[in-house]
Image 1: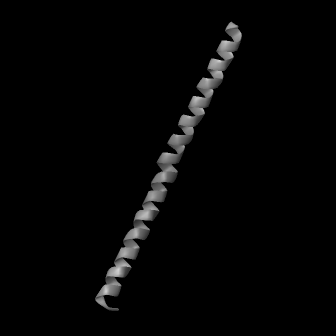
Image 2 (image 1 turned 90 degrees about the horizontal axis):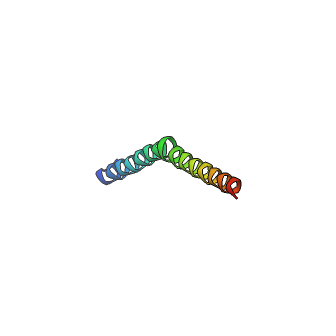
Image 3 (image 1 turned 60 degrees about the vertical axis):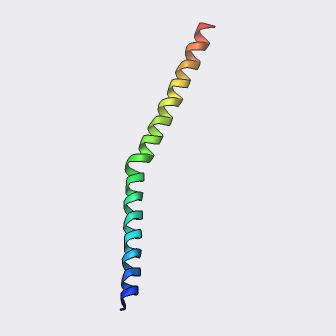
Length: 56
């Protein structure tokens, strides 16, 4: 294995590792936060519609 092949292999491993940890981060923090926020907003809108319907 020559030196440039070694550097290419290291670059490949680095990109693979960064991608792996980015996917773990997205699946464990970002996606649940996004879904929770959307569900909370939908609940608030539903509650406001229900409140507005009662007051009319």
